[in-house]
Amino acid sequence: MDELTTRVDGMLDDLCAELRRLTRIPSIAFPGYPPEPVTEAHDLVVDLLRDAGVRDIAALRLPDTSPVITGHIPPPHPDAPTVLLYGHYDVQPAGDEALWTTTPFEPTDVDGAIHGRGVADDKSNLIVHVGALRAFDGRPPVGIRIVFEGQEEYGSDFDDYPQAHPDEFACDAMVIADMGNIRPGTGTLTVALRGVVEVIVEVHTLEEARHSGNFGGAAPDALLVLLHALAALHDAKGDVAVPGLRREQWGGGGWSEEEFRRLAGIRDGMPLIGTGNLGSRLWSGPAITVTGLDAPSVERAASAVVPSARAKLNMRCHPAQDPAEAQRLLIEFLEGLRPFGVPLTVTQAGAPGSGFAAATDGVAYAAAHEALRTAWGEDLVHAAAGGSIPLVNSLAAAQPGAEILLFGAQDSMCNLHGPNERVLVSELRDAVVAEAAFFTAYAERFRRG
Ligand SMILES: [Zn+2]
Image (tube, rainbow, N blue to C red; front, side, top):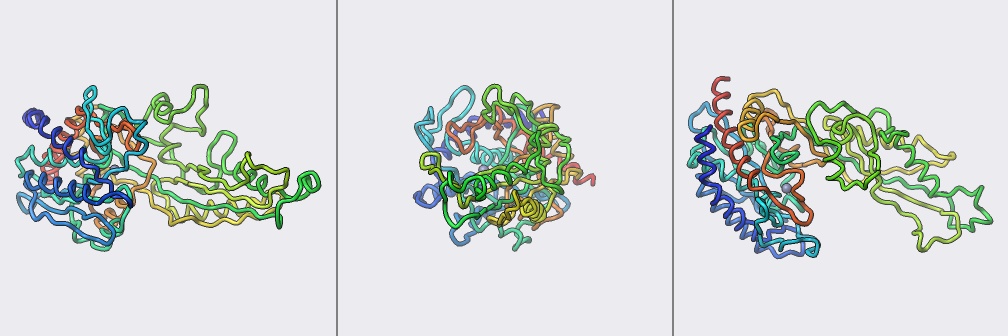
């Protein structure tokens, strides 16, 4: 392994230069942005892959979707496993440039990090894949299948594609590198993602607003009814009170409370809500957030009983709970409330999104544990992420026998999607070492069975 890390150290300057070159291209695949940079990033990534030994590189073209880059390296012998490598070459828009201390699409070196939009999410991880292949001069000990998306941030028709064309994604393991460590230097495998459900709750009580002096006290105030319903969603300690939602104690690693407070930007003196360890509140238990409320604004408030009100709820559910079931439980709970005897109308908003819970007892996980320890040391953790990634479920459905590994060069503090996005050069280097070491360890363990 010493030989491998020496090789990666020797390649690091070139990899950083290529990352800067790629980051300079504003490949934003959102409506209203020019398509040329997306094509330019695509072409540069194709060149990097070809140089790294990838063959039969092709573009999968779907309607209204930037081309998905595919390619492969055949396994060195028939008994070697194949690893699918995923990443995406599109980026988020820069957002408010006034909040940036550097220019978003001029990658800038600051204290051991490279700053720029998309430098972490997810261009760093494309470079990790390229670097891991280069470490073997394009002849890794495993077969490789490349799937690099070009419209991940905006969303596209590609999400449903793997499930419908499973043969094109045949592999033994996948490295979904759109991820990173819970903190710099702590090797992290993301083993779970919560599911997501959204509903709209509506209350209609009066034909129209009525004078609160003449009618308030007996006429049912729709906003008050809605607030009673919303208040019933959590118990006094802040845990979700909807019965039947799956909740388990989180057994993996995670942030300290202090790290979480800093990451979440919680004001001094504010308590956290809920009980149990942080992981069980953030990752292996349900969370309900009120994300929108339609009611008269304070500015325009009349002295009148409010006739109707509605709220949008976003619920995150246990990685292994069927989100349709979780949604049904939430809707039944709300419909059963009837504050003051007033019925609520509850409808689903959008399709439920499934969570993801990795099977972590296979050969690829054992190899990944070994590889991440090589790169980052003994403190390896299993963590989870709050958001769902639809493509992961589609890939899992396409290849139910493949082990899915989520790790990469990002870290929780890298400001992805926000201003001043950055990647640490040390994390980039260690992620290349981790992936290359994974190829070696996996080939070895796979051969032994
Ligand atoms: Zn991403």
